[in-house]
Length: 136
Image 1 (tube, helix red, strand yellow):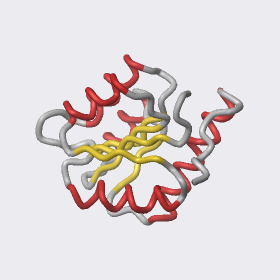
Image 2 (cartoon, rainbow, N blue to C red; image 1 turned 45 degrees about the vertical axis):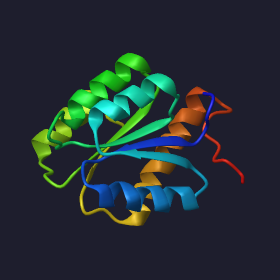
Image 3 (cartoon, rainbow, N blue to C red; image 1 turned 60 degrees about the vertical axis):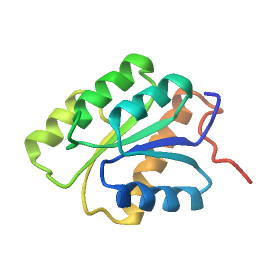
Image 4 (cartoon, helix red, strand yellow; image 1 turned 180 degrees about the horizontal axis):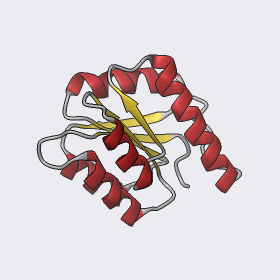
């Protein structure tokens, strides 16, 4: 991984992306936010990311579709799906198709931080020097 601690956030609600960016940058991560799935996917072609956090319900493309396209580019990326419309069936589908985790909105800061830490730990196990937040 060329950019440890690099997180892409995709949510069509600007406030969610801004909140996550602020929270995760305080933890030393580099964060890029997008409201358009197509732009986010183009960015994934240009840059390596460790983790993708994506909303499930978006106008142009749903988070499951985004996740499938992310995995085509890089199966090692950890994808965390978030949604305001959580159901057991949707959670099961997301996890079965490879999501690292599934989080219902509204989520607490400690919940997303814990999930990011667990994803980082999983990445470290597969790549021992991976995912160390930037020390600025």
